[in-house]
Picture 1 (cartoon, rainbow, N blue to C red):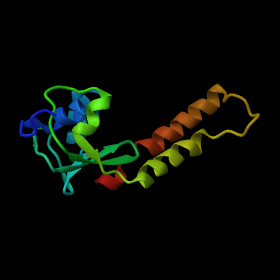
Picture 2 (picture 1 turned 45 degrees about the vertical axis):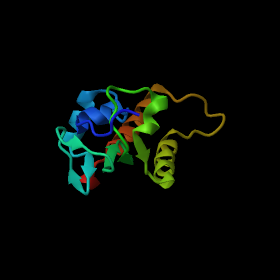
Picture 3 (picture 1 turned 90 degrees about the vertical axis):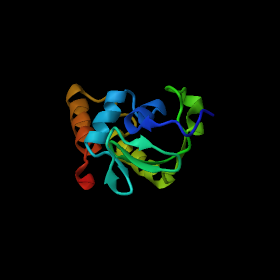
Picture 4 (picture 1 turned 135 degrees about the vertical axis):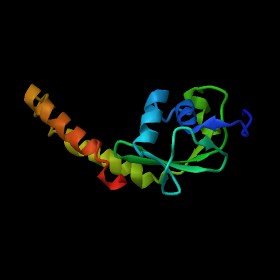
Length: 136
């Protein structure tokens, strides 16, 4: 594992451990209040320290991660567990899975959704998938 005492910005750390696809997405999430520590919003420039616990909102999923270290650069997916411990309760993953299935379920034999059906499904998924009202 790399040196855990290396000073790394929060947005950069979130990107390096693959919680966000791009660093700019991590910065936007921090600025939008979707990354919290101890109930407070985290600024993108905050220095990440070992042992800190972050609450990261990704759509409907609230992921809880504990910092174990800081990589030198973005790491591959198999190496991610070396740098953070996922404290997210399994019930949270189940809740999000059930929310997604609720909109996508179709009875056997109904066939593919029509263009109109697909648009309605996407509308509802986006409506409920990006609901951040409880994070204000």
